[in-house]
Image 1 (cartoon, rainbow, N blue to C red):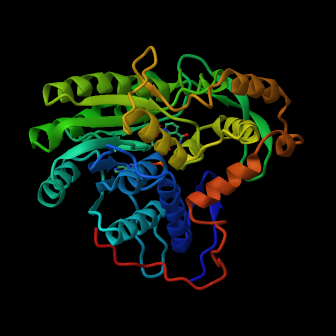
Image 2: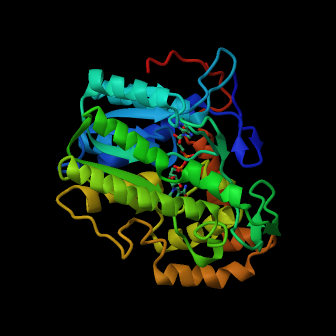
Length: 396
Ligand code: NAI
């Protein structure tokens, strides 16, 4: 079939297998171009491994450090006449490339929040890979079925206490308008913390420790975001920010668990705002990303997920380097985004952005091309008019 992008709001309902494979290969090539990471991870579990930061982490570990990897993700597989979700194609392409390079790559496609998927993952790690020295927790999900209560918690992206009004952009039409987001109810706050907070990360780490599948000195990292004041009401001080505070609480408790179990460490890494399926769903954030990209590209400091993860591994976690914690015990690879001169420029441009000035003041074109790329579209060298088989047999 011929596969074209079909964008519906902040998702694209189609994905191109060859484009996704090329996007994965681009990231592999980047990591290889940076040379090997010394003393890097060797056996890695990535929870949320198929897109965005999790996929980049898996690629960084495998191709930067020769690591065996196990990936957990939740993606719709391909069918005879229906394309898969991009994360499924990405994982297929990654697995093929890793195995061709002689590395172990195992996968489970299912709900990481469930006891059953945890059990299956531990079983396969035990039988096929052995204890892990790095666990990356990179889930971004709109809901979680609680494994004990069976309650379905839904996360929301809302301010807390008061409504918040600011500018947002319709990324399809380029229309900039004001949006008012009503505050979350107390239940919505609790639900968002249940989905995007740290409880599930702790459950994973406890299960791995109980099964003796954590190597001595194992590290675990989960990702967070802080960002500029303009997004604080809907991010840092909003429902998602409260969930991220809970992730930091979990990091401290997992850190203690890993120390008891053999001098390991757990921490939260605060990463840069990037175009991923998760971030495109947050109001106001895409417009901020458009302004930010324009400024960072002009300064030559722009990075994508793979550059962020490569820098985290090479300059903080491995290569003989030491973790550089901020005052709250977090690692910061959002440091270039948060540089005062970058943020001063964001502050200066923000009031001037309108529908009329969008193209000149922001990199909305870059935003759109990154967005389409998430689904395997707009990649040079791919013939998007060609007939392509959407269905593959994936030996997980
Ligand atoms: P993403 O949407 O690209 O990836 C989410 C991953 O979670 C995918 O692999 C998906 O399959 C998996 N997943 C979702 N629900 C699942 C479930 N029930 N079971 C198993 N797997 C499931 O998201 P992104 O942006 O890479 O986010 C990952 C983390 O990085 C999040 O914690 C996010 O807050 C954080 N982060 C994101 C930033 C951004 O700008 N995108 C910036 C800084 C941090």
